[in-house]
Length: 174
Image 1 (tube, rainbow, N blue to C red):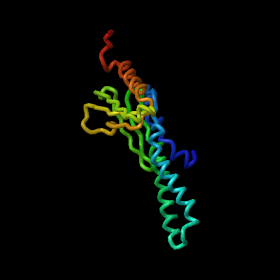
Image 2: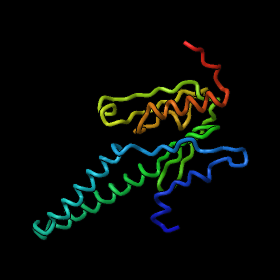
Image 3: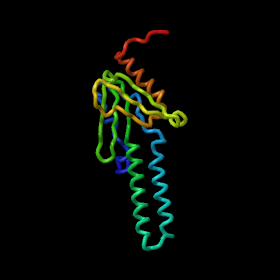
């Protein structure tokens, strides 16, 4: 695997408990809206590069330095968003994120007490929302999962997995 492929792949499969029969139900990547800020920074950096030949030579180095800084920050932002994954399995939910160092936060399905889905107006229009997990633990790395595409479908997938695992009582017919 090449360096660029390594940078883009957070390695979800290596965190699965295969010998216990754990399988991925859904792997959630950020909605495209999460990439807008890094994209805007990249466009600004490219615009500064395009303007730099027309700037006086005494200050051109400042423009080039700003352009390089914006492009580097934009690249970092894209990698950060791309490597941030939220995974739903038949046994737990977990999140893997980080560019150079990696952080893993996991929660067994039995510890999930409540899931809130918040959809701001622009999220409703564009098809994303934010998850907020409440668990028996006070502090955990899965509390807020932002920019989840198709949040209603993802919420139902988690509810189905929890139901199939027998962690909640049977549904009462209406």
